[in-house]
Amino acid sequence: MSGTWIQGRPLPEPAGMPPPLVVWVVSDGKPGHVNQSLGLAEALTRATPTAIHRLPAMPAWRAWLGLLLKRVPGGTFPKPDLIVGAGHATHLTLLALQRAHGGRSVVLMKPSLPRRCFDLCILPRHDGIAEDAHTLATAGALNRIQPAAARDAGHGLILVGGTSPHFEWDSDAVQLQIKSILARTPDTRWTLTTSRRTPADFVGALQAFPNLTVISHTATPPDWLPAQLARSSTVWVTPDSASMVFEALTAGADVGVFDLPVNPKSRVGRAIAQLADAQRITRFVHWCAHGKLHPNLHPLAEADRCAVWILDWLKKKNMANG
Image (cartoon, rainbow, N blue to C red):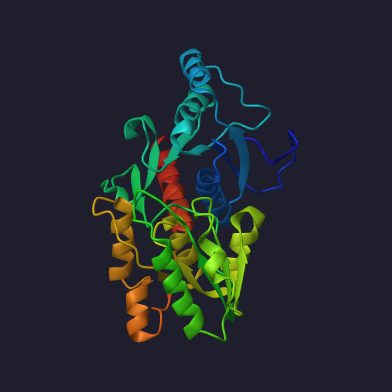
């Protein structure tokens, strides 16, 4: 394992310090998938000195060729200890890199290939796959969010999704619920943002509220949402935006979820129901009846839990190999 590298050149390690864990993150370019992989990689840096390097996923034909020939460019990066990927498009590249350069493979989310192809699998619990020595189930997808030390009690955040296979979208119903929240919390300054799935005419009926600021998802830079989650004491989310629900729970906010008809076969719908049953989130109908949200007393820290699990697994492997 090499030392810390900057712009392709190694830096000497301080005397007596072990070399860092080297993590290669394979990216398919999709922000949600990259967010999961970097969330895990950054959690590893909080647990042990770690050097993170990002590589793009290769086209399938090139990855197959690299896998067969055991020859895949790794740039000038030091050899990996872990190669992490999320999303089907990363799987072949992940395996080809491992065969050519060594290291342990870690796949996030249910892979398109058999799980035994990878050293470790980290999957959302709602996928329904049992844990074993090589598989860890998590509460939702991993993310890069960190709990904030201080929050603005007068600031709330509303995250609006849109059409999805998991819930039956109803703009009028969601607008009515938002208007009810705005009317009953006149002293809270609310910020609402949309997603690429939100109908174009959705926010028109909400502009008149003095305690609401609407920001389109097209006007938000990459770090905008984490910053908003860090300062907001309360977050309301449409249930189709499951990743946002888990990010808000990780940030430490009290989380409310709007009511929409659920697809009874949806795994995401079951995950939202489980969170509600555990009082981790508050459904809108419950908030209407009681006027308050369940407090988020124990923010999620799934990426950190996964990092500890991986490091324990590596330690056992190294001990077994002498």
